[in-house]
Length: 489
Image (tube, one colour):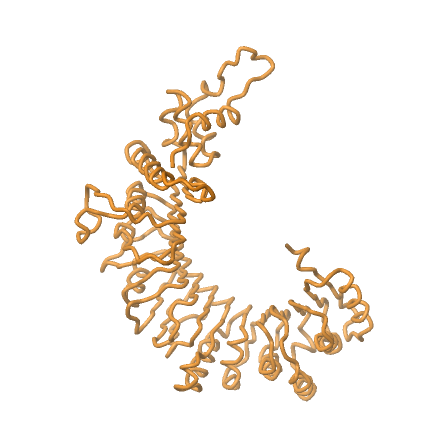
């Protein structure tokens, strides 16, 4: 929706056209500044108002397209005023988008950043001269045309997010896959990526895809192979029409994120990422197989996987062994997060895993009885562990005495010489939780800090702190810290 010329003119005049005490006649001094300075001023205004400056005078009419590193940021939740019922708002926004984009095509040297966030999908079609998709007979959705026009202007940063998750998938413009200029891509909202045989994205550095549909796993492989210098790649809630193998292969990739992309796990994951440093993997099911060809440089990993109900009935031990195999290849890790489901999946085969000698930080999800039984074995396989965090607190304590007993029989090396911080989040003040606190205070010989994070009131935390202060400490240097979740916000 185009800005109201009168309101825009008034706003801009208030913000950047000033009158000083020595200028009683109201001479417009700003408009006399060089184009470079005026364009710099416009770069600080939201797109809606920067475009609207063209109505101020002929002096301002053609300045906006020449802003250095021109950034177009469209958000229809701001432009459409969603709380107001007005049937003209949608066609007005569509008209505003075409007015701006057509003007940019004609006058702007390039678009540095194009950001489009929509609450609606704008399914109406429009004819476009030129070839976007041979199968569309020259008719395309408004969204696709706006994206296509941005890609034609050698955009560096492309961000598109559509909130409507009930609509059908829309085929993304093929021009994206041969855009020589784009460096950062973020796409979310039920788009179909029909990746061509040849992909040419020589400058891309990061690509984050959410709710994108691929025809098959080979499409992802082709996509990554055409990103010669990609460093960050994320697939979140992406799906596949057909998937046998999901292969991620790149010598430049440093960050890989895969979150909830295929719920049934009936596929193989192949990872060949020799320079990967951060790995975030979160799925509701364990893949049928993991083939890791090269992942020796990973320093931080977040693993959240668990056996689905169907997998447990089919062949639970096989999938548990797969999960352990995936974690085991990250043996050079310095920081590791394991969720509650991951702890359940890997505990029975952990004895076959070699020690994590480089691991210094271990973060754990919700601890239940299975978690307690496994925690002692975990600590024994991490001799240089310095930081232990319980990020979701504890749920059950029946097997906690067995954990204490196992530690007494075979004391983990990290407890005696390395562990210097324990952090417990979601603390509720139960007596069983206090027993955990007491254990680490008595057992960790070089502990320097034990932090308790809670949403309890200040008075409740004060009472708990009095109890904890009476617990014996093996390390005289240990400081007990209470952190309120409200204070952290």
